[in-house]
Image (cartoon, rainbow, N blue to C red; front, side, top):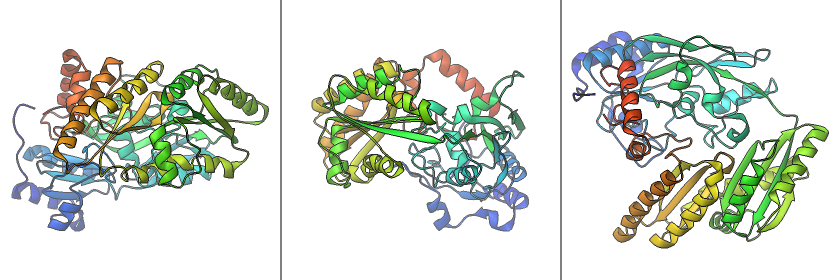
Length: 464
């Protein structure tokens, strides 16, 4: 985008009032503040809030903002951690919270048709009644929207076997920044007809088009689950075990990692029933009967090796739930170590996970800061938490230096700055380092084709 966008003005307000129901446009200060932040530390004060109810209203808002050359920021439920739904320089925030219907659920075709404001958890409840589920299961699933999940290609523990949003979205309807309505894909699992715009829009963080409907691939719920908890002497031994586990012919349906400091916090501050160890792997496999037992035994064998301290298998659903308690106890306990937390969701090739874990341990010592790691080891996607005291200028400066070194390490290992949270504002500079100039230029041309005036989520993902 070559020229700066205009600010919200009276002409745009009149056009929005003409296109929307009376209660769909919010201008009072309290509403603007409430929609001015997400789950990141970033803030912004939008000029107006729009609560759209259907695709035609979305199109009218896009057309009005384009005519006025005013920024338009899409918003789900504000659970994003990168500032992607923040309006740092004002503009219009379009919330999809009123477009929250489950339009269709077809068990025979294993397809759900949804509006973007539907909560992930609401879809899971409806699908479960038919013996199905939608694989993306981020921690925020009970209160994050499908549209928000699609915007950043959210994943979760089941991604290791079933894939993230891109792998489980069949089709989309959307309004481009040009105001054009587009249709991508459809309710079928096999397609060879034109460009795959569905996969392009998923993960584009509302910078190309605003999704108004999605057709999602549902998967049968597995009849049985087996859960294993493996404790290791140190994080390096656990990372080596991940490499062994991912070489097995039967993929685990979850493979989660926690380092030793995470275990200590979960035990001492979160009340989890855990022995002392240097690292933990939570391993799940799904299936039925003898096949499930055989797969669990193979994963048990792969988990054994140098540095294993203890290996436990859940005997029933209640014990399986108990094994996961350490993972759930972790997040609330993190800030007890230090009030400041920088949480990054880096991703590296799985075979380089041991090098990532070793490198992070070295950076922690070099910068004299705690670095706690947990996350989706089967995808090479770790949540790297740098903990510091913001009121200590020297420590805050070390945290920023350490963060830059973390991304240096990730890029050196062939990784990328985000595995599932997206880029938003927070990681834009690191994306520019991760991608070459030609790739960035092509991405900018794609942005221009969909959004000629650069009104959609300006400055997010790509620099304006």
